[in-house]
Image 1 (cartoon, rainbow, N blue to C red):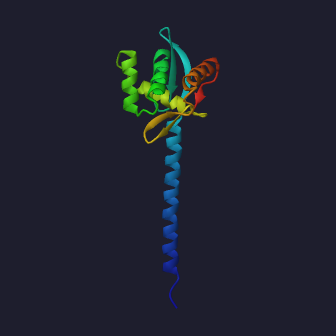
Image 2 (image 1 turned 180 degrees about the horizontal axis):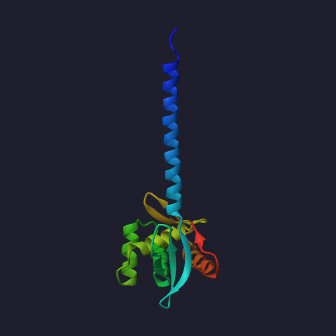
Image 3 (image 1 turned 180 degrees about the vertical axis):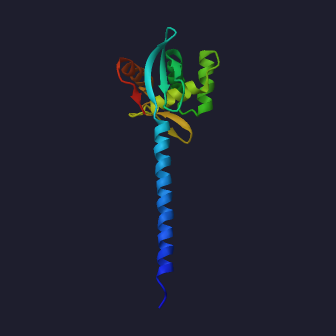
Length: 153
């Protein structure tokens, strides 16, 4: 009869390897959730009203002016289903000056919060309710401005 000990050792080694992979995956998932958690609020910065996004992993918040926010919303509505570069280009044309990429990204992440005002499909941004999209973005801004608690994603 064959000795079962080597087979048991092999199975135990395999089980420990799998357990290690699961623990590593769990740690990575927790870290990515922690890094990805953003809080949004409406602030006054140098007299301007801005949407700010803060994350535990960043030293300073990113701010998007109310004017840029409105132009991003109108540009997305006009384009229908833009990718990031198309949206960024339209926003710069409509504002008449350079706009940092983070301004678009912060705004898009804010709109992706539940309930989402936009969805991403094949690297394109699509309003969930095209007819009311711009109004919905204004309402989301106003709701956050009236709130005492930052919105978290």
